[in-house]
Image (cartoon, rainbow, N blue to C red; front, side):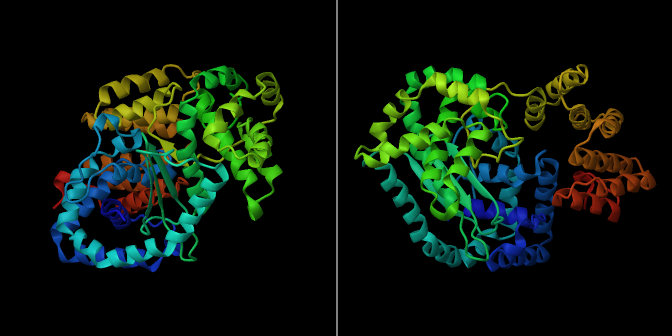
Length: 470
């Protein structure tokens, strides 16, 4: 149980976060109802919730699937209420958590004015009941994994693997994080009682195997040239530039295939993994046959597993593989910086989120001035527009938002360009044209709740900056 995650999840639900609501436990609706009642009784609480929701809308992730995840990343690294202080240096926060760091002061005020501690206490026994209900199933999953790997006692000394149940989040979402030596999994059971046990096991395997990979740097260096043959694969970029990550994921996929039971055909699981780019899965799957027959634990056998890789054969296998068009996203997000270069517009987004619109604009202009450089021109104009807006240049912002509409293909960029243009026009007193943009946003194809809410609010009434609201 974690009151900080509860507070963030409750606030997000209060802002219209409805993902997975139909499949959530009744507890989620109960907490939402309690927060609604608290806001009705207190104009100050209503104002603080509105301020938090405004921040959430303005800092929505480009990828809607990462929007709530960034608050989970932040919540894991915050102290208990009412302080909500980062437990590590701000400079060491994961990028997605740093992006929404500004929500802390708003969260503290909402926590106090809406009486969220009282709501937490009201439902704390229900949270404990969920922990008790799922404890045995989770413990069995961990123990079975330890038994298969023949782990030695004390292998994980000084490290933590923590699972949080947060029923205010969508049951379809699994938030798994690796921060230094600590691993966290934040999940929500569904109304059918199902829990993401395979995802818990996947995260636990990372927890066990990543330290082993770090101990065998020389062997990893020998395998590094294998990455040249997987650059066309659809797996995430971090795996294409870090051999230890690629090796670890391949080994995990092999272990999962060998222990899948009735969950899937092992041969298909291995082939699917290879086609995503984890070409060493085939080798590890075969090598684990001998491991299973031997009494040696994985911590001891790990070095031999790496040593026995025939690099030339594996490079040929990778070179001849017909990769799949896309790959499933990795469950685990790590705070470990990737050795892959950060794309230009991603750097611009980070600077913008960090309060540096001037340098964000410079990077976005580089993308605009290099139309053949493969950068998303619509996104570049969208960044320029937001930077101009932060700098008080409404004329420049309007021009760039219009250019974003002309160049963008992404529904979210299109929708929010219309929304921002509508707000600018409302501030300028042109309500008729503002409505045109709000309605266009609703027709843009972006079904994200924050987009829909912002556009509908624009249609319902003229936009006013937070400072002008009463």
